Amino acid sequence: MSDGQRASVDGLGPTDDWGRDLDILDHRFVDDPAAVWRELRDGCPVAFTERRGRAWMPVRYDDIATIANDTTHFSSRRVGVIDLPDSQREGRPLLTAPPITSDPPDHTWARRILLPAFSPHQIEVMTPITRAVARELVDGFADRGQSDAARDYAQHIPVRVIAHMLGVPASDEDMFTDWAVRILQEGFNDLQASLDAIIEVLQYFGVRIDERSAIAHEDRPDDLITLLLGTDVGGAPLDRKHLLGTCFLLLLAGIDTTWSALGSSLWHLATHPDDQARLRAEPELLDAAIEEFLRFYSPVTMAREVLDDVDAVGCPMHAGDKVLMSFPAANRDPAHFDDPDTFVIDRQHNRHVAFGKGIHRCLGSNLARMELKVALEEWLARIPTFEIIDPDAVTWTGGQVRGPRTIPVRW
Image 1 (cartoon, one colour):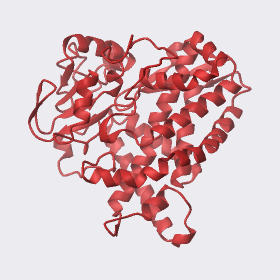
Image 2 (tube, one colour):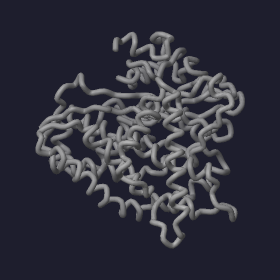
Image 3 (cartoon, helix red, strand yellow):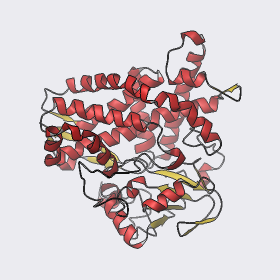
Image 4 (tube, one colour):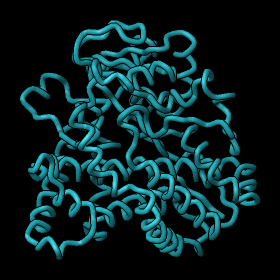
């Protein structure tokens, strides 16, 4: 589509003022958000928009941290960066996906339930399983001399890993990916399709939970659904809404985020031959490189809802407003990172917030790091020096999760 069409998905026309009329779906922002963050940081460090409801977006690290740590004035019950219009949301129940949509005190116990599933021991258990997935995928294209690093590789690994952890059939992978695309990638342009996909996910897990509940406790497999069914809070089992919402979160949160982070990493190596050569020559740099990939290409923006009128980070925010928590922008703040718009593969001081900040910092961060490390190790071990076939064929999406969706490469 034309630039004009791409910049006007909401029908309001392209913005000419990022600070007072922010449009996170404008192709200029999706293609190069760092340029917008720099402009805002120098002139209007908290952008505002009324395009899809009132929303604010701070771009400075300290402002984002302030709001992330303030659970008194800012709720996590609406974490989506774009909602249905108020007229369409009226009467619709909010999607409950604990613990990410939970506020204190419920957040504390909802998060604690899941901690054992993401412990260091469980990450060790999942490492060889992840490696087997990566090797099987590489087997499918290593001899072809080219592939789509996103569609043939990056998108599959997190889907198969989380399916294994949940205890749902790997054969449903295409369905899981379709839901992630419809909800997190395409939902901003078709909110009804996104809602339909959300309902499909909840119905799917309703069936899986009923199937698991029918199995005797001692015969249930050791997976996340069994963990949730076996949990009680205050002497009572988790209610069905909690069970379904947490399953929804576990499936969706781990797919597009890790897919995007891995895809960005492979795109970077394909387009920066010096970094690719150095990582091959010095594989001991991989851990540092992964942290820099996460900082430089942070995929996730989350939202908070303003609970009551409040002056925060220098802005008069109203109850019901949203604050877009641009963790990617925080990771480019020169007040916290030296030369932040330069990718430094061996960066030593890198306290990035790619996994968020505050009580909602990503529970699966260590799982994601492991998936990234294993996936990059297996790719680099089997695929010789690779490059982008056609830069114009690389497509990116933005909004809640930013990442490359097609990465045609050859070797």
